[in-house]
Image 1 (spheres, rainbow, N blue to C red):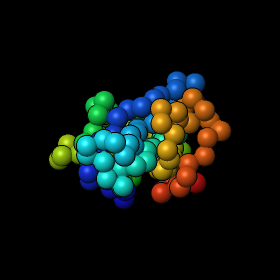
Image 2 (cartoon, one colour):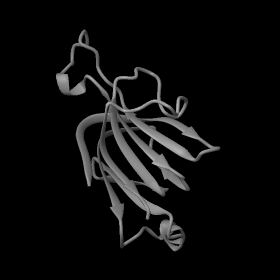
Image 3 (cartoon, rainbow, N blue to C red):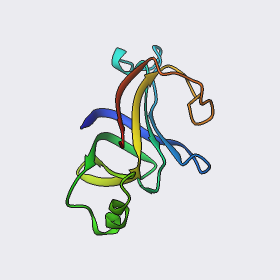
Image 4 (cartoon, rainbow, N blue to C red):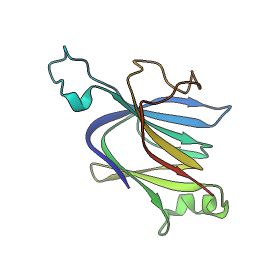
Length: 133
């Protein structure tokens, strides 16, 4: 389980051709009124081979986990594909879902750039990964 309780994430990008989804919590800059050192970098959550997205455009605080049982009825059809996983994102007691084969959580200071448009970029740190085997 991955948790970022005090950061705002936005849908930053999606590519149809590669079925990649990027959620980003933007970095804050030193001159911002609410700057704290722990906000001085982006946190990107990248989902690969996305088959389903059920998310609002912005999420305030989130917890991400892979669902292994008790799937919502609308997602049961995806559980038949062994390469896909149902990921649940909880925010303020609301539950949202992404069906994908993998995710990667990375930290970076890329400004507005991302791996959606510049695949060769490398994160400063990889915080978590999950990939179907």
